[in-house]
Length: 174
Image 1 (cartoon, one colour):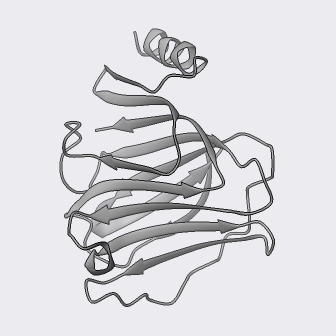
Image 2 (tube, rainbow, N blue to C red):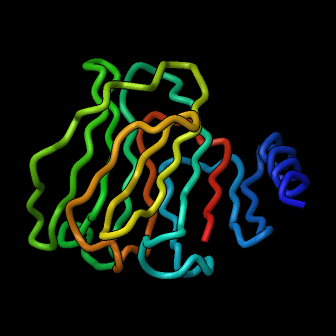
């Protein structure tokens, strides 16, 4: 059944329509317009990012620029929103940095260990796996890339994606 659901999700992503499909405890999107702000709680994914939750993004960077993926707390205005996790991949300098911003608007020191697993024009699968004690384990193409731990992940309600990236599908597993 899981393979059939995955097959149906892949078929859905071949059409230029944004779709939301709930299958086998997952929520999936296809051909997401960018920039995108996804309200995770409104979709039934729940608040926070704790085990066994996972976010799987199938995407392609079309240009030698940058893309940003953030897990965000639900607050307004945006400049006062906590961002417990940000991944920013910058192609000109071959750097994939992770960082976090507190509610006062201050960024911490970026972490950039693990290399640079992305290539312009090459599709990739990026997976965030919630770990114990507010750890986010990051996989690229099903290989361990790195981890990030900085702030409490229990208040995450949004997924933001922006800049130069084509997202063919997102799967939210809970």
